[in-house]
Amino acid sequence: MTRNNADRLPQAGNPPPTPPQFQKKAQLDFPSQTEFVDLPSKGLFYSPGHPLSEGAIEIRFMTAKDEDILSSQALIKRGIVIDRLLQNIIIDQRIQVHDLYVGDRDAIMVKARITGYGADYDVQLSCPNCDTQHKITFDLEKATHEELPDLSALDVEEKDGVFYLELPRSQVTLGVRPMFLGDENWLAESAKMNKKRGREEALLTNQFRRIIVSVQGSTDPNTIGSFIESMPAWDAKHLRALYKTIMPSVEMKHWFSCNDCSYEEEVEVPITVGFFWPK
Ligand SMILES: [Zn+2]
Image 1 (cartoon, rainbow, N blue to C red):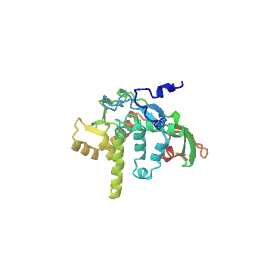
Image 2 (tube, rainbow, N blue to C red; image 1 turned 90 degrees about the horizontal axis):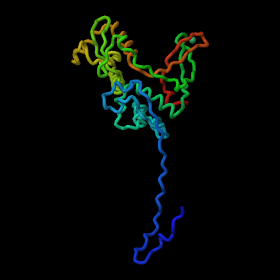
Image 3 (cartoon, rainbow, N blue to C red; image 1 turned 180 degrees about the vertical axis):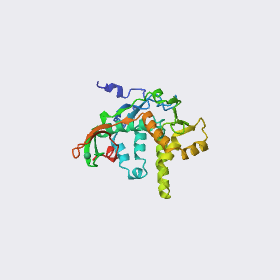
Image 4 (cartoon, rainbow, N blue to C red; image 1 turned 90 degrees about the vertical axis):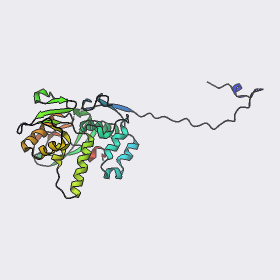
């Protein structure tokens, strides 16, 4: 459509037209592509009304700007590079990365990796039998989530995101909650401090301190603390195994077969440095 020049001519009685202005260059808009990620927790681990309680999260595809984050030596050194990346690609900024359940974080990481570098993930696996290193390429589109298992079959009861279970040896009933990213960061921080001070690592008991929220109905931190100190190893082992069964997580299973010793087994593909820094 051509513009009618007559519109621009001065007309008697009218003020002169304003001189032509440099036209501001129209801003090119590059809308970022986004995608929804289904959360392994299905939103159950967040309070009602929390933006994640719907069971999905919207993320933006990774961009060159996110690669800047991934290449920031300062962030890598502080161990917060992945957190920063995830915070950056989460659309709803009310969501704080620290509040994410760790299984949900893993699902977001997998999706982000696919948007940034594709689904082919090159990783080294060592043979569980002969320790030979094998290079495999895992298709990240094959990553799945476990569903929340049938809790009653496991003698576990869930209420408001806390799982109640009885330990086999001491027969104490515990209330256990999922690990969030904030817990994981706290554990990493405390491991660092212990190392600095030459203290022994207390990874296992520290983790129990984060996830056990009640002992025989008592939520008193001293009661919980002293129970953890004297917890039978048998119970600790049971708790760890049950916890892994209960908490929904991302599964990256690979059928491993060793051409050196012909050992075969289904193994869990680890998330290593090459995940966000592929060669
Ligand atoms: Zn082997």
